[in-house]
Amino acid sequence: MSKEHFYDIIKSPAITEKATLVSEHNQVVFNVAREATKTDIKKAVEGLFGVKVKAVNTLVRKGKERRFRGRPATLSDVKKAYVTLEEGQRLDVTTGL
Image (tube, rainbow, N blue to C red; front, side, top):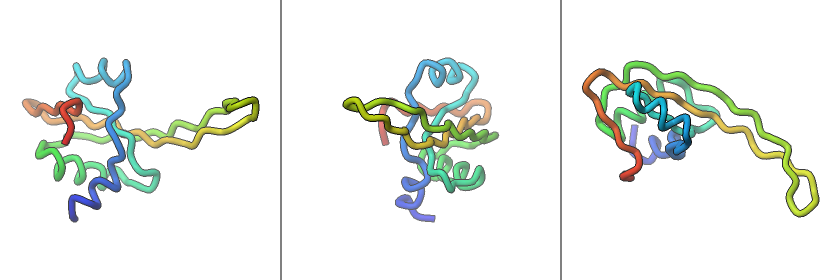
């Protein structure tokens, strides 16, 4: 697969308080494409960052109802991937690619 395809799978790193807490357990959180499978995510992370992936857990956060300028709106669903790295592997997503 090409690097462009990897960027289509991994949309962005999730920089949240919970993502910071799980980084202590050698995990990284990414926002990924809805149609991406666990094996696609594993190949993309290994191809882009050059690290070994131990496991991938995914979840779909359902979109929330919000009001924008007085009108109701629904945020879109977001798929997240919790990527566990092998022992001794480090990944810092705050430095960029």
